[in-house]
Each structure stands twice: as C-alpha cells, then as structure tokens.
Length: 259
Picture 1 (cartoon, rainbow, N blue to C red):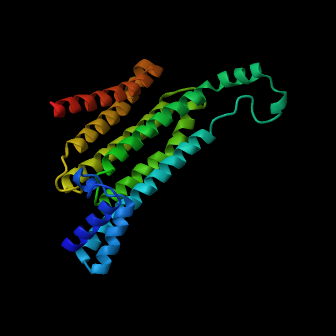
Picture 2: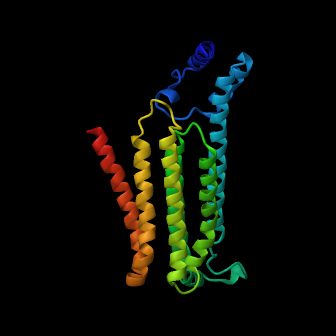
Picture 3: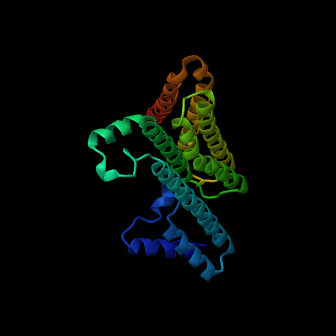
C-alpha cells in the first residue's frame, strides 16, 4: 500500500499537480486517478486497494449515468416546446402572426422554464452530495434509479401542467412528483451520512446542509398541493418560496460555519 501511494504521489507531482489534493479536501478522485490506482493495485496484487478503487469506479459510473439521464430529460423538455406559427407554411407567416401564436402558447414556455429550473435544482443537489460519495450501496443505487424515474417523468408532468385548463389534478400531479423526488433524495443523503460512505476525515456539515435544502424543497412542493385549493394559481409562488427558503438555509449555514 505504501509503494502504491508513493508511486501515485510521484506521478501526480511529475505532472505539476498537488499530491492527492482531491483526497485532502474530501472529494472523490477523478476518473483518471481511479483508473491509475486500480491498474497499480492489480499489478501489485493488492486486493484491498483494488476493491476500494472498484467502488470508486462504480460510483463514477452511477454519476455518469445520472448526468446522462438528466441531460436527456432537459432535451425532451425543449423538444416539446411549440414553434411560434407552427412548422407548416412557415415562409408565409408574418412576424405579428408568430408573436400572436407565441402568446397563445405562453403557458408552455412558462412550464418549460419552471421544469428547467426544477431539474437543474435536482441535479445541483445530486452533484453537491455525490462529489463526496465513495461507496454506493445497493440501497443508494436503487433509490437513485427511482429518483431518475421521476426525472424522466418530468417532461410528461410538464405537459400536464401546460395543456388545458389548470386544475388540482394537473397541479397536484406535478407538485407531488417533485415532492416525492426531493424526499427520495433526502433518504439517499441520510443513507450516505449514516453509512459514512465518504472520506473518513470529511466534515459532514456540507452533506447535512444539502439534506436540509432537500427537505425544505420537498415540503414546499407538498404544501403547495392543499394550498392550491385555497389560493389556486398563486400556489405556484410556494415553489419559488421553497427555493428561496432553501437558499436562505444554505447561506445561514455558511455564515454559522464561518463564524
């Protein structure tokens, strides 16, 4: 193990980079470093080191898969956007007609922006947490798959949100889907923290902060459903309020830890 660490440190130093800087800050090593360590462990026949690097590689594969699915979901959102004036006889349509048609589809564009921001919030939380994760258990992988299922369903629920007259079923389906997704990710964070699936010396305050943000967003979407019965479309403001509260929690936590 000592030979592996020293040999790896020398190779990193030769490239002009700090020795194991990613390990020192508690973040996951890059794919290149994991591959290099795994190759060295196999040459040295170090089973324990090879197993550790294989766990790193498994988490890396989960992250890549997650990023790909999120990117596809965002792409599907854009593909569903209606073209102002349509695609038929586009050359004969005037600018005023295009603008008038765009105003008729304003709900579609607003729904797209909402879902884009929501999916981006999901991805940011996932990225913020999994950058420190070094072991992905079967439970974490299973919950991550459920989380991705709801990501893939977001273009469908967005369509429900934008087409037809708004009602409790349309609004509630979208809000419930997002609330469940944030709740699932909160459970993932709890499993990561309790299982200590991060660097041994990592301060867990960042993970706890991410958990609080996730819970705040889950509660915001869930509470907006019964509020829709009382305030109707003003319930959309609850989603923005939940995001503001989530960011406020993050800032207060940063101030507390800095102090």
